[in-house]
Length: 123
Image 1 (spheres, rainbow, N blue to C red):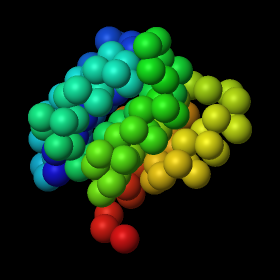
Image 2 (cartoon, rainbow, N blue to C red):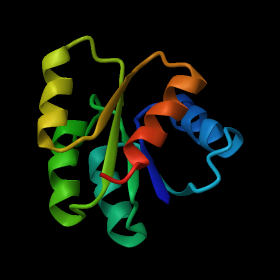
Image 3 (cartoon, rainbow, N blue to C red):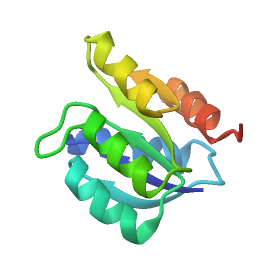
Image 4 (tube, one colour):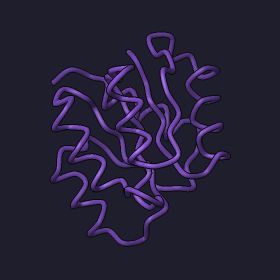
């Protein structure tokens, strides 16, 4: 499974990357790191990620807009929203657009790992 991490926080990108690489998710290879939705779309076109972790609040293009665009060009992509948003309606909007799961920041390594395994499960 090809994974792209989309978050404007370098600390969160590093943390998700570390959990994936050290957490026994052997089927996952990291193919891209993006700081915002616009960068994510550019990277996705060349790397074709199967799984994406997506922050919602980012500059340039936010996560909700990016989810819509990403699923338009790569409809089979499994998206896990990873967001600190206390605004539940934005998370619900992301799920309605096609995101398959949600993890609230701050998260534990186990919460992230379980959520990733869940969205990677074929439906």
